[in-house]
Amino acid sequence: MTVTLRIATRDWDYLTPLLLGDITSKHLDLKITRVSTLLNDLPGSSEFDAAEMSFSRYSSAMAGGQGDVIGIPCFIMRGFRHRCIITTEESPLETLADLKGKRIGVTGWRDSGNTWTRAALRRAGVGVEDAFWLAGRLTAEHPITDRLDGFGRPGRIESDPAERPMMDMLRNGDLDAVFTPFMPNGYFANGSGFRQVVRDFRAAEAAYYADVGYVPAHHLVGIKADIARANPWIVEELTRLIDESQVMWTAKRRKYAETSPFVLEELIYAARMLKPDWNDSGREQNRAMIAGFAEELHVQGILRTPISVEQLFPGLAA
Image 1 (cartoon, rainbow, N blue to C red):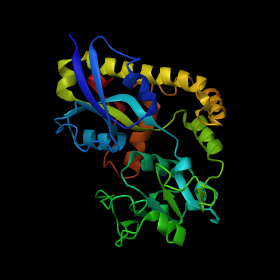
Image 2: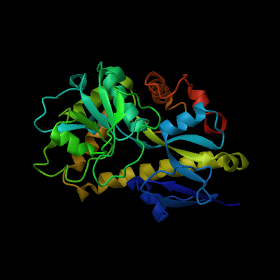
Image 3: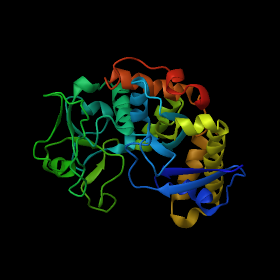
Image 4: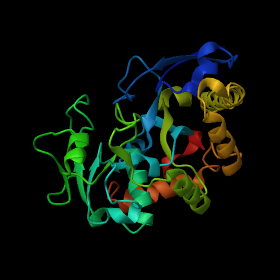
């Protein structure tokens, strides 16, 4: 018997072997829909059975006792965060420690990526109480929406009443730095006027990895609980398909590196600096990273009480 599973994910290039049919399953017919934004309500979706999910929002849901979605420790998005803190070219800021007492913009307070970025700052001695935070839209092209998500505190964590784009505020000196998961349009051009706070962010991230032993995860795969419980094998099979697609794509990327003039150097660096299993799925393989994220959620006040690795990924997801 073949089961059809409809999944919504971002447009990750390593899913190409799955989309092209190079990686297949005899038992699972995977229908992938690429989306630009994550689903707000997987349990209420009639269109999808599984989806890429925010690690932070999934953790909050589990802490609140939800049981409609089973999170799979197949982390579909990972990445270091030192590179995601930007400032102006003329700024005197050079290190994460320099951000103490500064005005920092964030694109969403609860976001997994921003949680990890604040974790990096905390390791540098800059906690939530050591800076002033403004949540807002990155550019005028981004929508105006609630980015505080209930975590605002007057005088410490606020939104701009005028909803000014944060890149404009950074340029004008109303912000000292901005956290952003993706660089804004124009950022890569010569003369953009912006740069990473940590100029050699690759070296800083390598040092971070040597210290903690993992690459932070931002998104995971979630599946409707009733589907997973009716077909327990789906969790393992879905994980296998995604993992094998990543392995195949990495091999092809290394062979066809000419798609970007200097990507070969990056591929060599990553292969030699990271452990071979850095991107493996599974609860036990990722225990240190999961526990580290859970601790940050609690320390930063996103979760009121601590949550364990087993509470986040029980039963079928182990």
